[in-house]
Length: 120
Image (cartoon, rainbow, N blue to C red; front, side):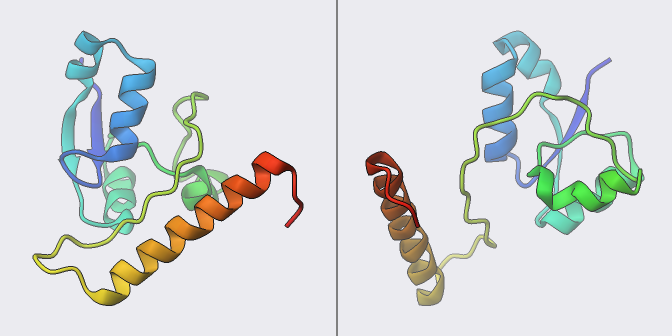
């Protein structure tokens, strides 16, 4: 039986990273039966109402795992990567562009700081 996954979009970046890292190409194709949702909340709602899987940041669902409403299906994990998730629009608002640039700058700064061993 194929595993069914819920993704943020049809090309969920976290799910894609997970499949590339842990599954061979043939296995990944069998796992790619997706339902897609346009928000984290919608993904969680689908998980709670079905027998699907999803790749989500652990901290975002930890309360539901602790309550026993969701289960962590695997001990496999991904390296922490930052994604800016936002609604798809024809025109990106300036505040979104500004936030994305701010986050990129902070990440570059933090990366440089860690390379030289500077404490925050």
